[in-house]
Image (cartoon, rainbow, N blue to C red; front, side, top):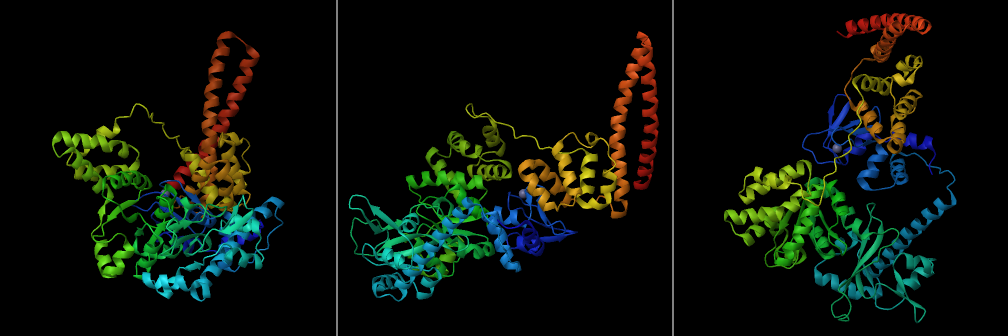
Amino acid sequence: MIPKHVVDEVRVRADIVSVISATVTLRRRGSSWVGLCPFHNEKTGSFNVIPTKQIYHCFGCGAGGDVFTFLQKTRGVAFIDAVKELAAQTGVVIEERQLSPEETARLNRRKDLYDTCEAAARWFETTLLVGRDGAPGRAYLEKRGVTLDTAKRYRLGFAPEGWNNLENHLRKEGYDLDLLLRAGLIKKQEERQTTYDVFRGRLLFPITDDRARPIAFGGRVLPGADKEAPKYLNSPGTEIYEKSKVLYGLSYARNAVQRKDRLIVVEGYFDAVSLWQAGFEEAVAPCGTALTAQHLEMVRRLTTKVVALFDTDEAGINAALRSLELFLAAGVQAMRLDLPGAKDPDEYVMKNGAAAFEERLTKTEPLLELVIRRVLDRHGASAEGRARAVAELVPTLRKLSGTVRDITIRRAAGWLGVPEDEILREVGRAPQDAPQTPAPARWTPDKDLAHLIWLVVHFPNEVKPIMATVEDPGLVSDRSDVLQAIARCLAGQTLPDVLAWAETDAPDIARVLASAAASPDLYRLEAAAFACRGILAGMELRELDARIRRITREIEHGATTGDKSSYMSRVVESATLNARRVVLQKLLNRKARAEG
Ligand SMILES: [Zn+2]
């Protein structure tokens, strides 16, 4: 673990605006920077970065946090890695505090796996580029038209024939058997009590994580190999590799994807590699699996446009319909790429060149349109056919929500030639088996409390002495977590710290605090103390009025029942409350004049 003062120092030194700018285009607005939220789909910027408070906040979806939270959420890295990365960039030296034995063990286990995969990648790479055993791999690369530069860029490698080449090499370098097994590089032959290399006689594509570290491999057999051998072989899942969360080539493609605002998804490693070689750096491939929701979640942070090949035979259309739901739910538009006369992008670009491929990219069509057209083809364009087509598409449309749903329905209506209202009506008709559960209401403070929280967030030092005079905190809020949040701010905790606490203990308060920090100036510094006094007076006055009403009722009741002693004490109390009321009212009048 990293000591807190070091985390604080990294946070101060890392400029939150420039860190977030790497992902989100920000424009200055007053003391904030504003852009399109990377956490929800929007057309207008509700996403605010507030450098003075070192936080970001989205008024649209409520996402908020500090520079570390941002990296964690957009890149899927752990807190500690986010801190380390920014520490390295800002030149802060980290001396870690003593880890618990379990933490150390876990970290070391992962680190060992990264090291092992890196060592394997290096050996495969060297074998391909210069090794005596690498000749078949080099010949194959040449045959496929992959240049040496490209091979180096992707760190392509070669695993020669033979059962224990990698194992022998890595064991000599000090990696033990258990590690090689856990990294998915070798396997056990239980009956004969032996082990063997997973990759033999294959061209290797290292699969990397978001920091371009090899975590797994994909291997292609060479032509002329055993017919039984699968054409492609991938590493099994390990502690550091989950195939549903990794896209081959994404660590290299990230910048190009953002720059061109599109991602090309291809099926094979060779497709991604030869597109890169042809100048299309924004190409990635899933690692031997269909696209998952997690993939699209990663993609959506970079772009909302995905270009992919979808088969147009019946089976292909059914597969496309399934992936369409994923795309629609993720708010990512899927565009279908058609490559006539080629079985894959690799073949197309090798045969026709980059310009022809670029030309194809201008002729993509939305997958939704393709699916709708196929459904229409099946049912016919008559009024009845259209109605049946709508009925078939409704279950898909129902899975969407918000603006994504509105836009999709509008498009679908256009392509189907059916009024938008008609589709909306069908989609809105709640299916019998899926009861709609309303989202839990968001907690929002009333105006006084919202203003008080704003003051506490912006001018803690000015309002602290006044808040210290509050005798009954129940007047401020009946929620202990709200009071706790206020107390933390007044005690001098930084907003990121208070948010980090609230994030786990009181998420809706985290949202309210971040929203206050991102809100425009309500009061000037000089007016803060006075405003705070006024708000507290207003809160007390409301409570006082309620008590006075209650006592007045009791006095009236006492007068009729003739209970003298309690009657007199009520009258005295009422007089005291009314005197206090006059004081408060005067203060509020002064405040109203000052603001008026
Ligand atoms: Zn948002």
